[in-house]
Length: 355
Ligand code: COI
Image (tube, rainbow, N blue to C red; front, side, top):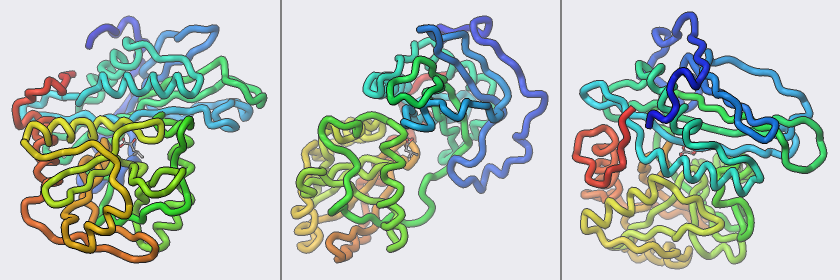
């Protein structure tokens, strides 16, 4: 993608880089940002010229609508470096498409491709030293849009800010992931914003997730809001269940995020001849499978989390530990996926895009 050329973006270079101060071996997820950020404002009914400039805080009016009504969306993407020092994106068109679907649902203007994808290419060219070589090293990309128009009337803003910030990252979860199955709280409802990557979808999970954390669990597997009987997603990742040798994952819906890692795992499983069924798994089925020993694996799949095995789940205060298995399907699929992302295996799907 080179539909934006540098003379269509104002570029102000940082006077120095903080890269030599970073301990790339010990990164807590999402705490450190690179030297530059991309910023582009929407006003007077159109997108203005984007700017790449030194990473820094900015001022907003206290009445900006993002503070009052949470009119905000984001994406999560990653850049990877191969053995020849080339930098790659993974299915960026999918994130671009989903970002604008989220924008539409949140009554925000769509971001043109030359600003989203073209701008991303330009900032990655500037920050390519921040993408470290070696499997497990990534540059996490956070495109987002906020409503910056002023006034507390509850109506969509007329001014927006689109930004891209970049954060060197290793794994999202450190240590084992145990989950609680939701029995009362809900992440999303039909007709709501569950399928959008809207900021509020995440903050709404903070309180129930804190209650789960207090009990020693890292995540919640959300169930459908109407009956709490169907397993849906885990908030920071979509979820897969392996019962005997069949993998299951819930179909996307108005309540479930259409995860890029999720759909890639489905395609990889199909290619590897793994029996995969996209259908809702019932909580009762899962509990039964855990009791009779046919539940072999549960794992999450997401950009930040990659493919993350879940070691156990709690339901109605009963804890079910997953068996320790050899030949984990989760780890096999993770390996296939990351081999493609780091260009260690041929990308037969055409998912990778060079910067
Ligand atoms: C991602 O996987 O990129 C996400 O957006 C999840 C986020 C909560 C880290």
